Length: 289
Ligand SMILES: *[C@@H]1O[C@H](CO)[C@@H](O)[C@H](O)[C@H]1NC(C)=O
Ligand SMILES: *[C@@H]1O[C@H](CO)[C@@H](O)[C@H](O)[C@H]1NC(C)=O
Ligand SMILES: *[C@@H]1O[C@H](CO)[C@@H](O)[C@H](O)[C@H]1NC(C)=O
Ligand SMILES: *[C@@H]1O[C@H](CO)[C@@H](O)[C@H](O)[C@H]1NC(C)=O
Ligand SMILES: *[C@@H]1O[C@H](CO)[C@@H](O)[C@H](O)[C@H]1NC(C)=O
Image (spheres, protein in one colour):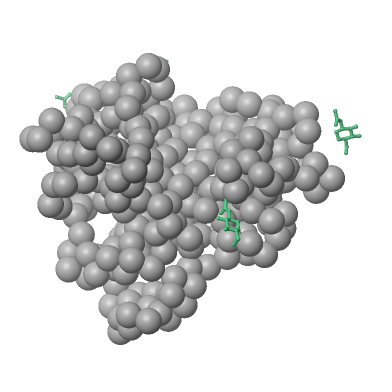
């Protein structure tokens, strides 16, 4: 089913075919946005909750962006959330969905969605920070238009690796390489965050294309936030064990899908950016996974 000549945008065929044999992982109940998150930017005017807590929208206009965070924090989790990104001319805007422990030596796992002019593709940007150090960007095009419908973006964060998935297709794996001296996020609890803001000084074509405020408000939608975590917030009790995600790794089909996405849909990889790292690539780039 893998035809080498297929491009990222024709991946839909592959996905449909693979899904038939792909068991969807069971997941926790969706969070109620009325109860389980705090609005931390933009207030009720820019963060709106609908359908009894099932759907949330962030809006950006010339007065403010918008953001929310979960009340609880987690040490290892599988987080799934469905996003529908800003439609039409979203140039200059950035929607995010990330896990972070905050602070100077923070750990962070990022999805960022860089807007674009109408009809031009979004960039899906990923990064991993450990102990305050990031610089581990990989960027992708999606094989669908992420503004037309909700799609599921997942972070599987266990003690061995971090897996980024889109509609259950792995797009990136960051392995625990502590053995070769690469710090791994495995001691700081993280909350789940999402935001929508104006980044027209860099987001679209390096800042050349500015936010068109006549198109405001810009709106991104979030639903079905599901968090499967090891233990309740601030508990060290790890009795909820043996959940699939806690040891999840890619099987041979998962590795095939990852290779496909990385060869067809990846538009930037820090691990091949030799100009940026003249002293040598970061060690995790050279480790086999
Ligand atoms: C998530 O948690 C639920 C309830 O504990 C469990 O049934 C399910 O298998 C978990 N999902 C994964 C992917 O581990
Ligand atoms: C912000 O947008 C509103 C509505 O379009 C407009 O009336 C107002 O003048 C704008 N303010 C600034 C500072 O641009
Ligand atoms: C916007 O679209 C142009 C043209 O396809 C592309 O070169 C650019 O990388 C896109 N920008 C972003 C932020 O994805
Ligand atoms: C968990 O931590 C939060 C703040 O980080 C605190 O408000 C809450 O009381 C703590 N809960 C328990 C059960 O210790
Ligand atoms: C851990 O949590 C479970 C379920 O809440 C409880 O039965 C158990 O006693 C706890 N264990 C410890 C060591 O606190």
